[in-house]
Image (cartoon, rainbow, N blue to C red; front, side, top):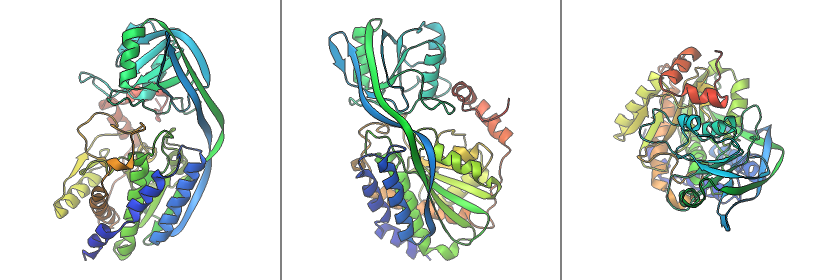
Length: 436
């Protein structure tokens, strides 16, 4: 009964797929590289023996970076444009707003200024403030430019999309700068006029969801998901090549255990996650959500050894993870809070049982993620194998008829967002999905 575990340790399916993904030049949503990554993933699921591996295209707003620049005094500072920034050049005073908390914007005049904010929040903050919320506050308070300053050392300017769901291209130019460049700008040029410019090609584009199934052909299904796209500045190994490699590895393991499956398991690698969860949103809008027993979304796995599963208040998802960890003598951390970021959220927002599977970390933020340093050399194949064993067992258990995972009322999800301090930021950015 446990022969499959040895097969996972011997398998190179997931790691080989990860290498193929990171060796593509660029997996930005809507790019040729994202299409190639989707095709590679479809073929890997076919090789694993899954049924009907296929691509499902959908239209998105394409964005391709050109040159970007910051000129301050006689200096030119290193930077990168943030995806979905408009193509624009602005000359205005720099205002260093530190953490860029909502109260910082209320207390400081940033009208007609270029505002710079950090990528983290202080320990005293009662909630995390997402990049897009800080960008929104800058726009609402009249800023004409936005600089996003990394809090991680290493001369690494961060990326990450801006803009709104209804209007994908943001209204003011936005750039990422490293912690060191941000410190230099704040020290030498706070209050002084600087110039920022973004050049980008904004065009219609196409992205893809990858789908395939295994197990009995039941109406009810368990979804095992990841996102195949990545930001264009790096290999995207952690975010989210590793998640898609995990999907392939679990699929390969389940092909050996197909007789153990009592519910259909569908594997989905979503496109265009990094620019607004577009692929998963398209899927969830068309799906019979009542037929989805659970969503196991892999985004942030492998980067550290111990799994951490955000369970969104679904008791059965937490209890099953704990049982699997105990069975194999391998800890699985569980977080019963709500996490409205990544592709599970397109389902969980409506009460569909969903969890966000990642790795435990003591560090704030994404670490190397969303920077040029998100490379495969920072990941360990051992972690992929060990986590794939645990997650394969997790999927098998959730697919059993005897394991009931109750859907939740969306009103209860909304109440959790309120109680956990997340609703305010979602309303600010236009991401609040519930009627008031």
